[in-house]
Length: 145
Image: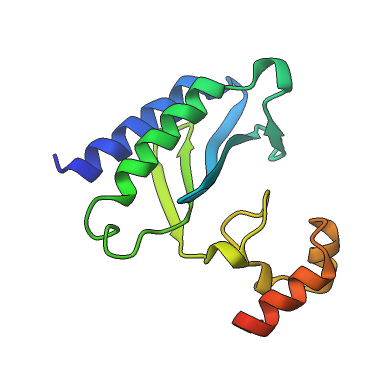
């Protein structure tokens, strides 16, 4: 098994360890930049609704573990040449694991906005995410829409 496969396996096991009984799938979304990171798990319940862990039951140790694992993954080939900055790791109740990556410049990202650039958003989406219109315009001017 290659190093990246071992990391994927550890991430999958970590997701499984916090997967609620009523979940059809669980995922962890995150962004990792040199000076900051943000990681959080959510799940889809049996009714198809997105659920989050509440404050008292938030899996902080899980998030720390995922941060360490994803940092290691960023440093492995082929990612070491151009490390991805956003990820989404998904595990279904059947045990199927999938990991998606996005390459988003830090100045085109926003706290709480995962797997999408600020410059990709419509004005309506910008308002929903509480991103100042001035910041959005800077991103659109620099990166296009």
